[in-house]
Amino acid sequence: MTRGKCIQYAIFFVLSVLAPVFLRNNYLRELLVMCCIFAILALSLDIITGYMGQLSFGHAAFFGLGGYAAALVPLRLGMSCWLGFLVAIVLAAFFGFLIGYISLKRTRGMYLAIVTYGFGWVLIIIATNWFSLTRGTSGLYNIPWPVIAVPYLPKIVLYSNISYYYFVLTLLILVMYLINRLLRTRFGRALITLRESEDLARSVGINPLKYYILAFTLATALAGLAGAAYAYHIRIVVPSLLGMHYMFIMLIMVLVGGMGTIGGPVIGSIIYIWGSELLRFSGAIRFFIFGAIMIMFIIFMPRGVYPKLESLGAHLGRLFSRKTRL
Amino acid sequence: MLILEANRLSKNFGGLRALDSLDIEIEHGEIFGLIGPNGSGKTTLLNVTTGFLKPEVGDIKYKGKPIKGLQPYEIAARGIIRTFQVATTLSDLTAKENIIAGSYLKTNDTLWGSFFNTRGYKEQKAKMSQKANQVLTFLGMEERRNVLAGNLAPAEQRKLEIGIALAAEPELLLLDEPAAGLNAEECDELLKIVRSIQHEGATIIIVEHNMKVVMNLCTRIMVIDYGRKVAEGSPPEIAHNDEVISIYLGRDVHAKSK
Image (tube, rainbow over all chains, first blue to last red; front, side, top):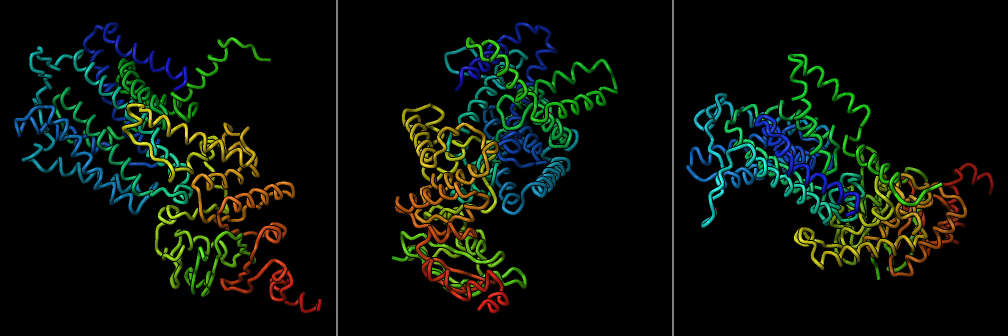
């Protein structure tokens, strides 16, 4: 890791740990929690768009699936929330594998986008109509919050914003580390080679289907994790979590923040959450303004905010370097 | 010893017969040239051999074992690596990263190792980096290793393509028009590179249009037209073969010149 990257991550770490100290308002802390949850979600989508170079329009379905699984485990089975997290991840991975296998075996690109869109809708319809399981559009509420109960230590209840924030921040950092490390293995290299040229990849021994399915399953598992984190904080899950509203939010975060980078989706999440907050004052037309701003972002920073920040950082670095160049 | 054998290979695209009952035998360690007019089926033959296309009829055996119907990645795992007619270097990655991409089959770093930055992982990374540098030096491109592939000159990109294939340590290397767009000097360099690869023990099949390259490089040449074998033999034999000459110059012209 270069020194610049080290500094970047250090700054991010310090700021994110200290953030609740500077933002004492409970509502603002709520936003911080949302930033982390959606950052994990955006990172999961980025595995598909940024590292696989494909489009999945059904990704929100796995977010919602994770949320429902997380809700049902304590509510219907009476088990702990931690089991809920596990079930959410496993269930999202399972369906991700199934849907991924069917879709990726025969489709790529635009066709894959359409097929995944269809699968997403199937899950939405199931969630809306399987009333006995999901209570339909009324949704599941009163979801309990996780409790960290280690013997001989005091119980930590993850109810308040500040405690939940540090919890999801830890999750986010773990996810960022996992993805970063994954990219530096044979798996990551195969994926990137596949993204750049599927033919070349095949000619040097890479099995496209194997890697696409693995990456897709990982992405859906992480989306499920984000969904569970969401469920245990907001404590209500409704079918719209599987729908296009969240799908587009995720896409915006990834596109504006920067595809194919670790910092990109995180920045995208921060921009989206804080951006839509700052625009609150404008009332109904805020979506219009927000849309216009997003368009500006894409026009002037097509690779995303994070790559732009990186190149600015490189420029600044050159300004401060000791050697003067001619 | 025969490294590659194909019998009665046929491939149709709808009504178009791209390969017509073709037989080939490639000896281990030779540089085999495949020439013929545009559209004669040369690239189709490469595609069928490496699994990118499936033949309707015929068998292919590599080192005695059948490989018909296998996927390209399985064939690559057995030691047959190909390059492409169109440049398929990874333009947004550096030259060195491109070479590393080609070394997929020869590396095995696990997530565990990566996660905990184990010593084994670090060693593997260093070995991978070293091998990539070796390939780049072999091609005379070590100074360009951090240049994005998209920014390389076309001749360098062609060399890089060969480098990516070399990273996979092929026993049988299939080059698809490697001299396309190269000037005389670059062609000479290509000749040297291919001879060195043969010297390292690989067998090479080269599809080419550039006669100077083919005649200078190949131990044996096969000429195909309309998917059918027209002639096969040593370079001098082919150069003086009536039928080959008439294919390239046109039957009427050749008849008139006699």
